Length: 273
Image (tube, rainbow, N blue to C red; front, side, top):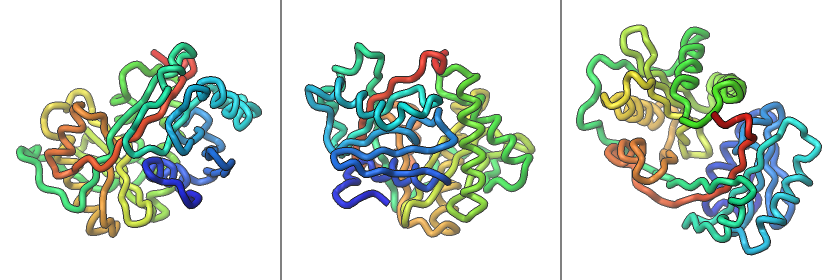
């Protein structure tokens, strides 16, 4: 659990990371160390969380603390820092840029109810995954629909490990992974896992050949409805970058922005396309 006094904006990210088997949290006073042994390439499963945005000395001090926490773990080749500010204030994050860090920001959108998409995709069936074939298809779709700019080799290693973890979580009753099927073909998928009474969306992915057809909206709506009824969710949360396609889709279904978050990340050179 997150120690008292934390959780103004990083609570959802951190609590979900801690739902993963073997994940650990260490309270070091002014910062938290979140680690996920066995998944060293999971950036936001191995990171430091600070109470406030980076100050003028952070670009020097924070990497030193990361080295102190993860230096013995040779397979952790990235550096990632988040800060617990619900406004998403960047502070002195620009000071990290010369060392190869990139500022990552987003909005947390929440909904206590969802409305149907304006134009649902005809013939699309949405259901929780069941069995090896479903999970293999979802993993393949996640690989195909990866974010641009990532090297497919390292990405595949991380994604396969995370999908195996998500399957274990789903089968343990902690949430569900949903596939959107056109006939027998899975064309989109996502996960929803519970943190208390909040259902947190994970890894919404639509196959490139099926984008722009309302598939994402249809999937998110159906999965949300299932989460409210079958998973007992009282609220749903999803993260999006303001102005991006996903953000527009989620808002059209009734999700509203409730807070912002910010972090800075330096990926290993080999993970970049």
